[in-house]
Image (cartoon, rainbow, N blue to C red; front, side, top):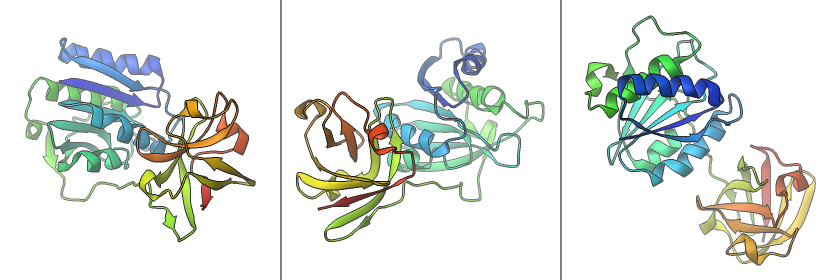
Length: 251
């Protein structure tokens, strides 16, 4: 099985996690999603997993965006349809992606007591992923959770007859602004967008290349959400946009 890693801890600490996995399963196939999630930004990590996880089959997704490490927050495994798993902290990080894949069961990992209180990624989550990848049964190192896991969702925008009020989910390295507005809710090919104090008219294109150079435009992202972009430029800088800011769309 493939083991993916998504963290906010940087590449050097992620290497320790890989070493732990390979010490248990030398044949493990490890894929890095990202180790550059903004520190403690659980929602950003959740969006990346939501976008990436459906493109894997028979995969174990380890997520370490864990501001509560060492506290009483649980360490969990979420088993999903299609022999897919999520392993990491019980802080909502996996819930959007797990719901998208179809949740079959949630388990709490049994702690041994000798783990580092500040690096569960290396001492708890990585070994758990390696054990599953070798075919170990979950109930040998985890128990079914009786409580509901901590939830996180991307919230539904407020949809009105001639307007939508949503929020910014994610800003990628190009400065593209991905919103929580689904493509199916967008009316027409031209509308106004307001983020912060900046409002302007945009056109909805099928791809970035249809816009003029430096044009502010809209596309439907590869994840199915409305995205505000700037052809060969940075839309986030133009709007002074940040994650979780509100966005208004007027038709």
